[in-house]
Amino acid sequence: MLFSPTPLHIPDGFLSLFVSILFWVITLITLSIAVRRTENIDEKQVPLMGVMAAFIFAAQMINFPVAGGTSGHLLGGALAAIMLGPWAGMLVMTAVVAVQGLLFQDGGLLVMGANIFNMGLLTAAIGFGLYKVADGRKRTLKLGAAGIGAWLSVMAGALFTALQLWLSGTARLDIVLPAMLGVHALIGVGEALITVAALAFIFNTRPDLIEDAESPARGGRGWVFVGGLISLVVVFLSPFASANPDGLERVAINMGFIGQGADSPFSLLSDYTLPFLGETGLSTILAGLAGILVVGALIYFLARGRVKTA
Amino acid sequence: MIHNNLFDRYLVGESPLHRLSPIVKVVLTILFILSNALLPDGHWLGFGISWLVILLLNLIGELGWSFTLKRSFIALPFALAAITAIFALPGETLASFDFLSLHLVATDVGLLRFFSIVIRSWLSVQVAILLVTTTQFPDLIHALEHLRLPRLLVTVIAFLYRYIFVLSDEVLRLLRARQARSASLPNLRSGGSVLWRARIAGNMVGQLFLRSYERSDRIYNAMLARGYQGHLRTLNRHTMHSRDWLILISGIALLLILQIFTRLIG
Image (cartoon, rainbow over all chains, first blue to last red; front, top):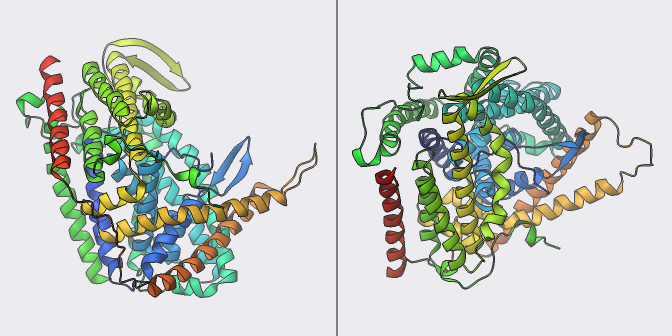
């Protein structure tokens, strides 16, 4: 097997309809901004992004033996974002996740929104944001920032995968969260090492490409804020939730995320049901749509604000 | 040499399923997976009917009835994550035991949830396999464009598919070169520390990056030479004929009937 399925590719059936659709909407809104931000740059960027998507796909096949028959390999979100800019990096990672899901069934279709979010959007935002912290500093500092960004990007993907599984009623938080974070703390080290080594290689051989990549047109200092914010969530939420899953559960219940029903963890608008479709079907979609509209509007206006200031 | 067989999942055929418009196939595949997600836990009749539909489609696609079944075990490792569902939901206690510091109580509701998740995922994987075995990937990409996916994204996906073959050959060459330089004597360690190995892998990734980057430059020039104007063109128009509409609508109707029927029974 040349490409090894990572535990981050969620198959269909493992996420509830609400979580699937929620993350599709978040992903689609972010992607539509990404498309608009990259569309108007020079058309040369199009074949570059396409070949870079194939590059990430192929680079995931390069592995190195770690111990006991296991091997480390690259996810690539942070590297793509550093070299191409955050928006282009997100689109490239989206294409990679889409092809893995469509062609190899490595990750589902209905849950692809969540998969793109975990492996493409989060990783690109964190990877680029933290790399930008060392903007204009010494090379070692830049490489260090890239390494931390790569490690955190994998951890963020693992954290959100665990949270999505838990919110879907598929897994128990106090088991799935420590398991996912524990495994990916190691996988993330591999990611960080490869990312740093690859960047160092490019620094040495084609420093002009790094200069291109660091031009403010690709992504401004604002990304430090975005990436830093997500990183903070990961850094503070992970240990808290691992040590005290009941605490997170209580917060989620207080915020109305988890209803009382055992059948469906989501019954935000539990009275909103259509008689012949029962409790779980369309009613969940409608309940979900209401929540999605709120979240979507929030993200849209936040993003618009950012685009204006950038 | 290009390793087509590594990545291509398409099986050549002339069955009605192969000839059906890719747009219809994509829409119905997604609706089928949605229908799976909508079936409540433990609705074995609904799951059973869905599986019969898949078996039937296997036959219509002239693949042999068990084709998708044989290929559908890829999602199984992920079922590990769902095992905890057995202990996650309140219900009648079936068994309880302590594992490390955790007190686990298996409940009937949890068990029902676990099996429902595994079956849903297994059915969804099968229908997705059916889609890619009977549809050429370029046609699939065009279908995505017709379904109003942003053109930029579709173009990137099309490029990805076009150059996976080329770049994976590049990777295989890099891996072979590493292999050739990694001789090891029996009873002796070879290849340095983990850190060193990771650096070598990183250098290979960097090398691959540069080769890809430079290749994309050449590709762009070649495209310009052929009159590229910012988007890819296709000779296959993929217009929807009345037959395609008929199949699309009857497919949707069948899924609706399945949803209503299983709820009336259950």
